[in-house]
Image 1 (cartoon, rainbow, N blue to C red):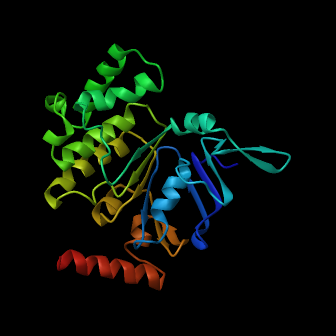
Image 2 (image 1 turned 180 degrees about the horizontal axis):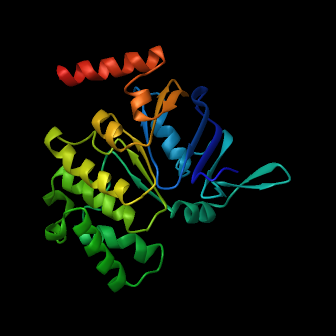
Length: 260
């Protein structure tokens, strides 16, 4: 075992004979930020969902902080864990989706405080106190009593980040967290993510935001058609890509950026 917080080896996943992941290897050190780039359908989101067991892998193994995700290994054989055990593993991992998935009937602070009370059995008082701190951390102290419908997309996504942080995860997964937002709201979410990275949170981010990947990522991984095409520092992968597929993808992104 390496010292990586996330250690994925030869991960495969198919949906109805369509092989979406064709043997993904990835190591993410503690406190590191990895950005996954690639065209739609390249397997990025599926891989993210496999890490926290929202999808079951068909082959390979994924460890998070030394725990084999979703399985126990005995005598070289894998045994699927019970749902309860998988849920316990998942508690350690925060996930932020494209769509904010907030509870519409709860205020911002209630959304953030809910899981620690329900899942970890924290007192309501303690959970609310930390929820208030987290809303302040994402710049929404003044919106704690607002319902999701009263918040902009960017504000809802920041509440969703605070909600994920409320469980005190050791790993945060972001699945294109800004892709559903109006362009002028993207910055406020990326700012929160930058601060998280600066605070040493281990993060895996599926994104098309090149400037974020360039500035914040320790490692950039370019995926296409279910495989890792190349991986390295932002300067290597974005600044000086070696592979034709990476070059084509980046030049297409640039031209879309220039002529939206």
